Length: 449
Image (cartoon, rainbow, N blue to C red):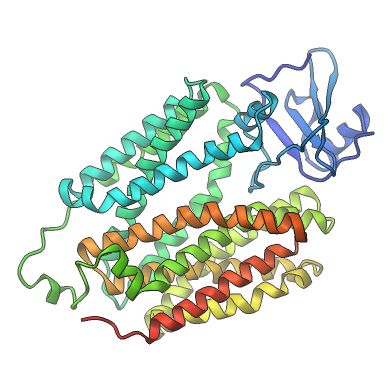
């Protein structure tokens, strides 16, 4: 009988596997394709093309063991592909308990729902308690919720902790991005915001590295991750809250709107929301479906996953150039141009995937252009709003990100299921075109004084 322990790592081979393979055939895949060792004690997971059969290969004390299961009804749900191929033990245990993908979905939705609630509460909490105090409390609560996952087994407990994590993380993004946007003048805002978005993307790339590192200490993994959150406390504690607005504040801020409501921001600056929605959907759709599309074209698992890394590297590398262009030629013009270039690049994806070398360069540029849409949404919010309105604008970006991150991949999954992997490109192109149209219409409206 195969036992699933916390001190094991679980690797998923994403290429459809011939279930006639047994010990030698599966061990060969582990060594040649996954670049791992079958005798390491890790568990290696293989699924057939119809996704109704699964085989698990692992070393069991004195020899290799194979566990084979065939579903009489339904299919196995694959977790979203990221830059690391390690499958979380949580998802595997949910499947092993006979729980369907809807349970996994609700678990993921708990953090998103918490994030939306935290986003809406951020501006009022910041005005009442101060930026620094709210951020310090949020870091502490986020760390505590992560550490608590180490000691909770109940599904309801996990869902509650994930919701608390979402509530505490959202204000960090909202307040932090508004804070960064309030520091520079308009002449250098694009470059300063670009430094932030570049740093953020680099941390996304480093995230899987940390995940892989803590996987070697599963009994302390959540403790380590919680401790990492606490590293942010000294920097926040040293910062100072800005003085309260007084007479002449609006003139000092260059006439920027400091009192716009949530709906007013959407009405007068729709491109901010549309840009955040586009990149959030792009980010999550590429993360989930690009490796699968690459696998369909015969890529190895490692090369398919590397495609996502190239997109992230392009995003991180090209943001400063986008910020410089925005400072030089105006954020609105560069924002619109980025959307138009994205509309031109996306239809080329099915052609570029078949051209080695050019494919990687294409993904690099694609990631950079898509990332600039988000960067310039932030720049736009800083140029147009200040004070409480800037907090609300940052909140709208965060809220839109959570919403688009949930709806975008889900809608794409439905389309891909019926039309095939190439439909991913069509969904992204429609969203990019929608952004261009929204930005165009919004730029024609007179800016309120």
